Image (tube, rainbow, N blue to C red):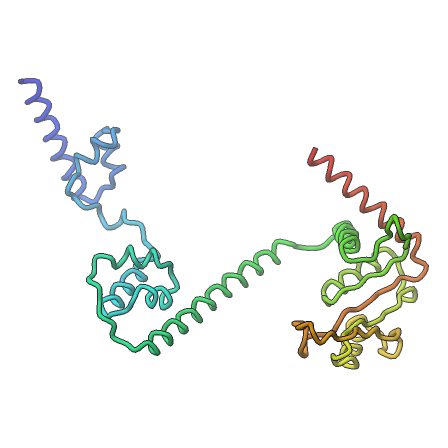
Length: 286
């Protein structure tokens, strides 16, 4: 009995010291080091009931959202309306306001839809900002482009988008087709790296017959820095009335076809380069 009373007295004395230190503004870690109490459960018991000092509280980025959510809930907003207004998850809204009484609706269905649409619009803006920042950071990480990096990119680009010879149909020609102006520019830079002169290149537009053919021809000619009159005859794709086309409007310019004259040797080299890339990749995976 005496041992238990002494142990209780020791704890109470230690608790008084812990409370004094807590009220003096010390953190739990500082109290632990001061009193040499390293048992987490005992340390918690020593300061039980004493709030931590303000300086130890971590700032919570969602505190403002929580306060705003509670304010809107008191005004009669639903979970979905608050979610759309603040651009946060419904589970967060529920966690923040679940202790508040269920409010009566204070707006018409039309007003609710307007709030929802406005909130979703704000959410989309926030998402777009995040996407643009991700793209910016990714772009900055590329740095300068070496000749070897351009060479490897060009080999992969051609093998993905260029014409390839088949076992059942031998075609050792270098023909590249694409609708992305950026891809076309990278491909031309790659050909320059390989010392393929522009005199060996022939350009042709491929586009649907219902599009603005003349505008598309001029666009591609300007992009590759040639006179539009030097383009080979444009290939017109027949329109299928049963097909709903999505590539329409002013932004649709068809595809540009780039052919390298006397390209059989270059094609064989491309095939060899790509084969070695695949082999080296298999070695890394193996």
